[in-house]
Length: 281
Image (tube, rainbow, N blue to C red; front, side, top):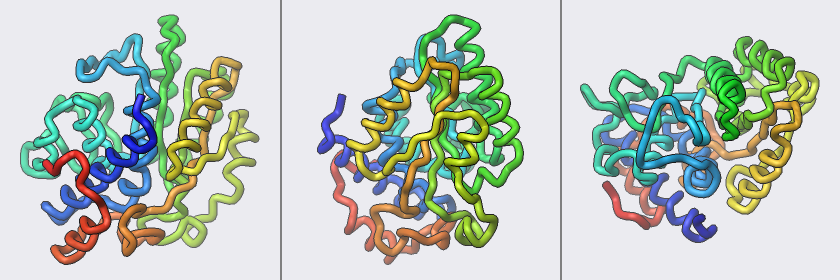
């Protein structure tokens, strides 16, 4: 287990990786990646039971994670690398020709840690439910985690999956929604208001929890509560409040950095705000 201080150091390096990766190819999605960094760092370093650096597609006997909003691949790749799944130096190949680190996670390249191709929004919850149901059938007592964007909840398949999970008592699943209030074309409120997500998920039969996605103590406490609520007949969803672009002041709280790469000066400005703690790739 990492201390809060150690988690913050890892998060700073991951955020450096994100902006450098996206800048190097002038392509990618820094905003949501920066916003979800603290969640990913907690999940992989202090929460999930995995067999890293050993990786198998079946995931038997270990917790699984599925990223539904696959465009935030930079944060996932960085955390996987720092968790030992593949060399950190490989981050320098992000989005390049024939790389294993595609712009959206893919499986044909065989990158350790990736079990499904993702980025076609709305599909990840269905996959996670299938994996959780398989674990139940196999008497595998581990947990399935998944992450979604709040704008992604505008996809109808999410709600079909939500209904299925509650009906079939998929209670070994902990889903998280990145509630940053932003999507590619503007704020979620302006594009298509989501209303009360708590009321919606409760109406669909889920246990609903709220979480500050930038407070490591709050993340740990909420995930502990989510695990405690598991196994009682209902799936669990965590509504995680974050700020898009967290850690880089000129990127925070705006949809403009959803899928835009920083220029040279902006990269230098961003890196000046993010201490190098583990060494740049």
